[in-house]
Length: 152
Image: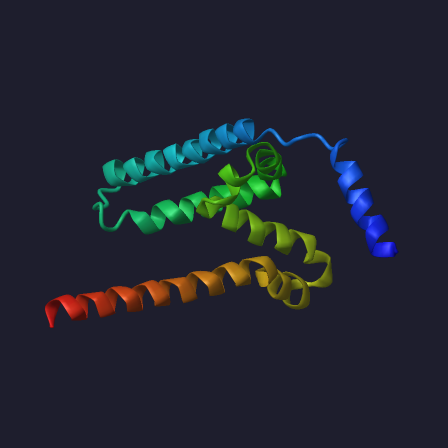
């Protein structure tokens, strides 16, 4: 009887829930994500023109600068407002990853450096790192096997 009541409640309440504005959310995510990429391109051009980095070597300082900017904006509370506005547009780039780590570190700083910041900083980011490493391994193995079958 309890399950049937829950199902009826879920069906009835759907009529009164507002529909999310999917198109508007997609446009906001696209524009903000594109703007973050535009800033990254500007930083990359800056390093190439001012410090004479080659195209091959400019990626690491560019990503490090974007991570630093994101961490600072998170510390000042600006990146969270951007995330509320843009959704995935601010979460998908590397700046979103830096935001998740910085937010977790700030949330647990009262527990101390080791037991608070260091252990809790990777709770959310750790799963992303593991997934990235496993996905890179699988794609690398597929590419390796495909190259072996075409060359050998």
